Length: 422
Image 1: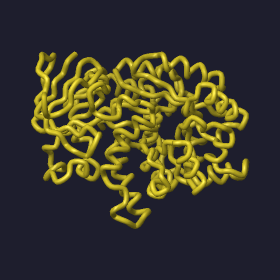
Image 2: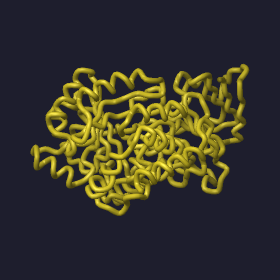
Image 3: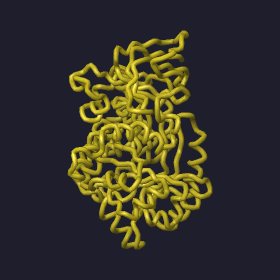
């Protein structure tokens, strides 16, 4: 299908410049984005945006989508109590159907926030992947092995299976965390990373107790321990990275690791504030943003995450100039794509994937327009998202979902939640 967007403002993320012009798609690809030498031709649909803004879709670089069933269920608890007494026991009751439905519910929420792909770490991956492909949603799956389930051999099977599953699905090696995974398993994963020359991802230094526990066990922080095991030879990344020290930052810079910050979750669980400005001062520029799961956030909203990224750094640094808005927007759009190895989803340009969001600027919170990027980060909300497109297909438009029956998903999700949570 060929689609023409015209009378549009376009932020390609190749620079901070705003273009007034057109964007064309053909199938799953962008064929034109600009204001000069606009190609002529026939289109299946022509959309007059009347000055609305097109941006690359946001990328949710760390989440557990199907945890929507635990939204507002186990709040106001310390991380360990939350995880071991509430989350793990109820996750054990999940069925294939439940993961399918809860995943679609989460994906719907992403679409309303202009999120076009997510880096998801969870279980029952066949159901998860089918939920995504059935609705046309793009996702990168992350291995989640730990001592409660999974094997190194199983991770290898998943790696090969889901990297051939569907154009909308890919897979990266990963595990839940050091504190939930014994050393023997981690050593096996290190060998797997070296075998496939593949990056490795995990929760890392999310809390002080987690980091202190690793030092007690091995005399090293999680990141230092992973390096010692040879897990980081081909890069990868850490989710959270709140309690990073100087040596952790040196390793992250040297190995080209991605730092995926999750500010809402870290605040709500009282985990701390990641030292992103200090990381930047030490030359770490590979950064992305995630929402984490709905059980700990509880809102899967990239606008809220973007505001907190910059606001928390300003607070931590005692400097209102810290972490400018465009840097945060770049993390949310382009950084997340590259962290997930979605190298054709990072900017709006011919040949790139047609993954984009349309933002309505003619709303009170977007007016007046002094600086669009700053408006998005400091004033933007989900109400400004009027369209979300993935692989050239419009999945969300003017409050309506085009590939799922919203009421059916809500009803099934409510029924399944009652069965699991009582």
